[in-house]
Image (cartoon, rainbow, N blue to C red):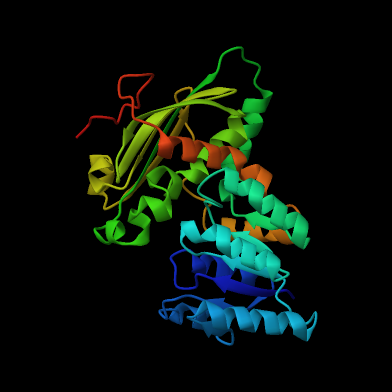
Length: 315
């Protein structure tokens, strides 16, 4: 049984990490969050020590490290706001633990090089949650693309609408300096998926860059991609809204819809199983997606250049 610590226990994604830790037969012994709204921990690890101050958490982790192998924290799961991931991963490694960090690993690709140095110095490793790489439908698509012999690039349309209420813009998620913008905060998994299936990133154009909407064109070794991301419920197709749905996800490859709406609930557990077995995804696997979202964030929109997603201009 491995001892885990958890940073960001009050966040939306933290329960998935707690569930994965429990389901892989391990335990959280210490958790940190500046908010004390962490009653969810009673459903998973009621005996874990909890801290709202980093300094006390730091002292407790160090005490466990000095107490011996049975008490030492072996892994630190990081579910904190995006802009804190870099610092918290460094803390984990310097505390003698491997880090398991939520997406996006960092906001800018050059941060990965610095983290690689900390890995070398500490002898510990950084792992990340790239769960779409473990989704059966995505794996099947990757194998299909790899097996197809074609001189032309595949035509891909990616649409992801996940509506958010007014609270979103008032939280850290609405602050580009902290979250990285919509492409980073909700799109990074999809950009990693595109790299995973279609090879190296080659070119990008941004057509729309707003707080709640972004769209553009991406080119990979084996694909030409038109993408659209939105947080606005008005961008959910009307037929879906009539069903009471607030989220819409669609990927077509050469005009064929790829069905992967199911199978998400256990992917954090699968990710933890792979990490604990030594088959997790590390810094190198994050390079392409972080490069893409950083380029999108820093690009000047060029609405008239390149191929546009059909959803642009619908409102």
